[in-house]
Amino acid sequence: MRVKKAELHQLIKNKIAKAGLSPEHAEIVSDVLTFADARGIHSHGAMRVEYYSERIAKGGITNDPKFSFEQTAPSCGMFEGDNGSGFVAAEKAMDHAIEMAKKNGVAVVGVRNISHSGALAYYVERAAEQDMVALSVCQSDPMVVPFGGSEPYFGTNPIAFAAPSNDDRVITFDMATTVQAWGKILHARSKKEAIPDSWAVDEQGNPTTDSTAVNALLPIAGPKGYGLMMMVDVLSGILLGVPFGKHVSSMYHDLSKGRELGQLHIVINPDFFIGLDTFKKNISTMLDELKEISPSPGFTEVNYPGERGRAREKNYEENGIEIVDDIYEYLISDDIHYDRYDHKNKFAE
Image (cartoon, rainbow, N blue to C red; front, side):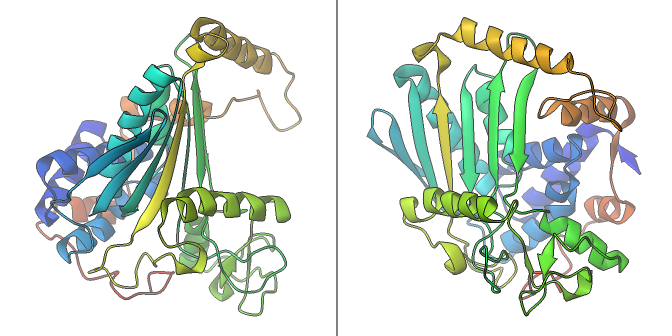
């Protein structure tokens, strides 16, 4: 079914607040989840609300966290999340990074001891909207085999980037460092469908097309993706003093405990380099030139990163956001959660 963005936002906020978060924090969580659904990133949208609500209700997310920020140098800082909502901590830490970069040219802010923070694109776009260039990386559950290995060690460890132009176009990409996202495996598993043999491996470390036999994902482009996911874990784990690699907590193992995740924001002020006006002008020129390239067979045009997501958002604003009926029924219900996720495996089974 289709739901207007404002209605979806309110329903999510109501449910998260009922689970125990303050109205202020529930508002931010709803902002990020609605952003994801509006861009067509449904794996990070309303479908996650029941999981977050169960973790909040069971104490795995601190409802009244003691957030703190320490600026350790003119361009460096650490944000302590106290296992509060990752959405809220990541947004507040990004705001600190933006202000530091405006003043000092560059900012690197670590966010530690937080819960899951959702679609990273939201945070880097927050910086781009204020004429900054931003990069954000974070950890996730160990579910990916290292190149040449047969057992999972790293998570999907996403990377997001955004940069402004001199018009309303924003370059945005948000990618996992695996060939395919975990949600795609779960979707195929629920449908009992086969998957390409380049996506995942079984318990013996062999490539598999059987979605029900998947034990771990594969890094994108083999050793290159392996290097990228290690880089992300170093920057958002080891650098920040939180658990890393196979020590990162499971999303579903125990919803009464905090996850102690890490995230890193890097924000750059173009005005301290080539100058903001020239930077934005050259970004726009780049995008124009990409549009002038003849498309290859099967394509109608060359899209810049983030373009299709913004097109989906415009369509959804006009026609409503697509939401699975069962998710909508949960959102409008009086129930907080149905005990579906606690102490489950990585498939939430």
